[in-house]
Amino acid sequence: MPAHLFQILLSLADRHLHGLAITKDVMERTERQMHLWPGMLYGALKKMTQDGWVKEVDAPATFASGGGKPRFYAITPAGRKACAEEARRMAAFVEVARDKRLVGAAKPARAR
Image (spheres, one colour):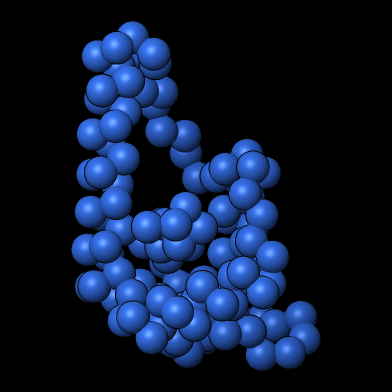
């Protein structure tokens, strides 16, 4: 799975977000190493919608738009499964790197 698809699914794993919020979440989580330009983001969301990994949902009732009508997205069960499988695949690589003493123990997760 391409890294940007995985990062988008991670962003949607626990909440519904609009495009700009997904971009900001990915930039924060990757410490600005991955920037989802609009063409990349919306192309990926279109593909993942077609593949059944995400779906467009209504904006939360409490959402106040600063202009325009942002599209909100949610992960689907198929998207959650694909994301989990990719996370397990990457975790196996990290375990090999630990066994080879290339990386130490995992850092504690930081609070959001």
